[in-house]
Each structure stands twice: as C-alpha cells, then as structure tokens.
Length: 521
Image 1 (cartoon, rainbow, N blue to C red):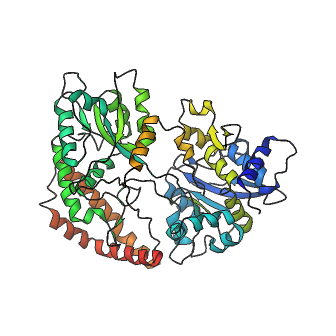
Image 2 (cartoon, rainbow, N blue to C red):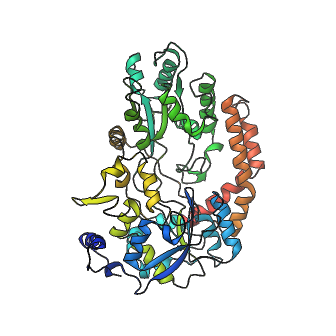
C-alpha cells in the first residue's frame, strides 16, 4: 500500500464527496471483506452506535469506503460494563472474532498471545504496516512497553497525545479578596488553605468553605508529592513506579509515603481537606464550585477551566485558574500526573482470523494522515473541515451542549481502537485559561518519567496474581483509615511493612523487577 504525502492524503479524503475521484490509495481489497470485531470499552459495549448494520458509526462508513474492509460487531459481554468479565466471556466461548479490541486488553492479550490465541504482530507490521512501523521507529521504547514476555507484541495500542493532563487549580478571586498570593511551596499552601477555612472568602458569613476538594478521592493521595513521596508511577492511580535507582517499587511501601500520609492525615483532621472526600464522588467539582464552597483542587486542564464561563453569571468575579505545583518540603515542583504515551487499550488479531495481512493493513490505515484524522475528528465535512491545513471542528460541534468528546464517541471517533490520538482534537475546546495554564506548566520541568508496565511470563504472572490483589486491598484499606484518623501511620509503620512482607510484597517486587529488566534492557 503506497504511503501518501499529506497533500495526497487530504485529496484522497476530499474525494469522499467528489464523484469520480479514485479512492484506491487506501484500498486494501478489491471486493468488500467482512471482519468480525469484539469492541468492549467503558462507554460502549459493541462496535457501532447500536451494533446493527443500519447503525454503523459514520467513521466506520468512511473507513469501509476507503479500505474495502467492513467491520461487523461480534462483541461478547454486551450486558456488562466490566471489560475483564467481557474478555473472559470471549475467551471462554472459543469462537473468537477476527479482531479483539477495547479497554484493558494488554494483559489478557499478552498472557494468551504466546499460547496461540492471538497473532504476533512484529513481522506483520514490518512487512505490511509502514505507518505503524514509522511510529515505533520515531518513539523508541514504546514497542517494548507493549511486548509480551516472549518478546512479541500482540496488539496495536491506543496512543494518547499531549503532555499535560491534570493541574493544580485555585480560586484566584478568593486569594484576591483575602490579599493573598498564590502559594509557592507546601508551607504557603498550608497557610492559604487555613485562610480559606477561617476567613470566609465566599462572604456568606458561614464557615462552610472546603479548602481542598477533589471529585476523584485518589487526588487527596496526590498531596503526597508535597512531601516528596509518590502516589503512582503512571496515569493509573496506585501504580508501581521507577525509583531513581532504576528499580520497580510501590510508592505505598516507602518511608516518604509514611511521612507524607501523616501530613495528609493532619490536614484532614484540621478540615483543610473535604471531610466527604471519600464519599462525595464525581459530583464534587460541580457542586462545590457552583455553590461557591470549593477553594482548590487537582483536576484536568480542559474540563476544569470551563467553570469560569459556566459560573460567571452565578458567582460574581468567579476565577478558578491553574497555578504551578507548590514546591515540596525539599523544594521540588512536581506534576506527577501526565498523559501516558501508551495505553493498555487497542486491538489485536485473533488466531481464527483468516486474513491477518489484510487486517494489519487495515490497522495501518488508521496511522495514515487520513485515517488519523478520521479516528480523531470524525468525518470531514460532517464534524470538521480542513482549514489552512488544520482539522477544525464545525461551530455546531464546538458550541453544542454535548461535550465534544461525547459527540466523537457517537460517530466512532476517539474510541478505543488502535490509533494515535491528535491533541489538536482537545486543544480546540480547551478554555483560554487552561491554554495559558498549559503554557505556564510547559515553561518548567515539572513532569516525571512514567512506568509503562511489564509483561510477565507464566510463572511471574502466577506470583503476581497470588499476592498482589490482597496486598493492594490492604494498602488502600490502611491508607484510608490513616487519613480518616483511624490509627497512626507513623506509630504503626513497622507493623505495616512487616505485614506487607508477610503478604508477599517482596515476592511481587522481585517478579516485577525481573520482568522489567527483561523487557527494557
């Protein structure tokens, strides 16, 4: 399949609405070829709006016209939102569809791929997928990150774009009212939170302000970074991380964690942290901001900055803006959360697929300029237009009451196929305050390297499965108890570490490091 220049790709895409223009540049088969697909992800259990041929995604319709490949839904577990349960149902039934895709497929695909359930993609990509191979060549280390213990990789992943995800946000109007500056370190942050608690910045005469809040309770644990500890090593909460010495460890078994959590418990006891942080849930941001109660949080750039416009007519002077992470106790400014470059989501070719070459060429289509635009923005002329060489959403998309990402899901864009995301998709609907915040963050060296995961062999997987689930549950149980004041992390620390080791922590860390060294050496 010939690789097009950008101009050629755009002409090929424009040809969709130009009668008589040849579309052979992306054609994989002369006659339509149907491939069955399992696609299970959090927002949809099935491939297509309704799963029937009459309700296919508009994006799928265009992909069919360009490539000749027709995906037909054959998703297992349509009655469950649990991706692991759906995958288990799929594997148990034995009748595998041609393509297996969706959320969190890395672990089962890497586990069962070497056993013959999925097709290794290394040679197929080298021989038939020049655009995917070009991506691997330009991003060293990512192919290794998705590889199985046997050295092969078995799926094409969803590849996020952009650097920054979450940021620190503060009520600048509250600071101004109280005559305070933005906090530059952990001690100044403490003073600001105390002032928010005590000095009535919302002006209602009540002591009802919530200084620090979060809609994901795990973001209270993110405060650990203020005392030079870690809460996670990736964009997944509670994940392992890579130590400065290059070893895999877990942040909740380090001395810095003890010290940081003791301070978090202190702040919670002093009501500097939302007393309902563990129970308020996803509505916390909406409620606490709209009721003029919340002062500071750590949340996504794009969605959080939208509150300035949403609440400008309700709360006079409302100004909720990103600010730099306060320096830690040791003077380090760290933004622990960043967009991970590679996800455990995507799609794989099952052993029963009789057309692996055509399928990998189809996967490769989504890495062409045309395929990438289709996967990110939807159908040209319907949801976006090419303006001065840039894919620009139509005004009715940007100005809709429905979020842009939700609109994209409905047309088949931004779903969990194997594709390379384009950050321009999000930048267009990112509020000006967030854009300025991203530029501010980009001026400083804030981001930390991420743990991209490991692939276990069968023996290592058995150790991990035996010990880690109960270890993780125990860690989180004690974590929440300590924050809430049930126990003392400092007084109980030695007993806690001894319990972790009795439960198999050392064994888990050993197999993690063995796999890590093998995979990334």
